Image 1 (spheres, rainbow, N blue to C red):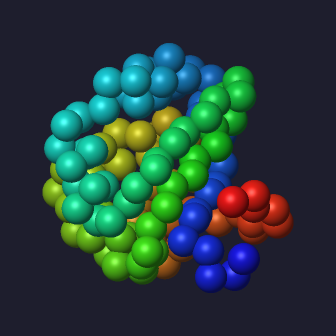
Image 2 (image 1 turned 90 degrees about the vertical axis):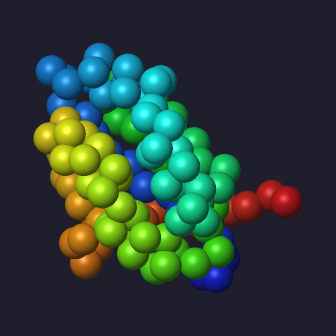
Amino acid sequence: MENSNKLAWTWRVKEECLEEYVQMHLNPWAEILEEHSKAGITNYSIFQNGNQFFYCFECDDKEAAFAYIAQSEACNRWNAITSKMVEGSFDFNEETPMEPLREVFYLE
């Protein structure tokens, strides 16, 4: 599973930001959706468990996708807002913007 094209990670959202964070993701900016598609990201889902969120998506070239997102003006504006809401950072200009989870099972 080392060569999987899936990526998953979790973040906790600060309690005081929870409602705004959820609303932003229920009504994402059209340009954000477009930029993620242009980056090659597909099948992107976010699941909520209290203030913990589980993110997963598929992408053929994670490094290229992250590089594209890091250069996207729209994504940088979005991430500047959401980074303040989470315990961690959405800054794709960082070397490791998130800690990916290890995939231990997959049923095709």
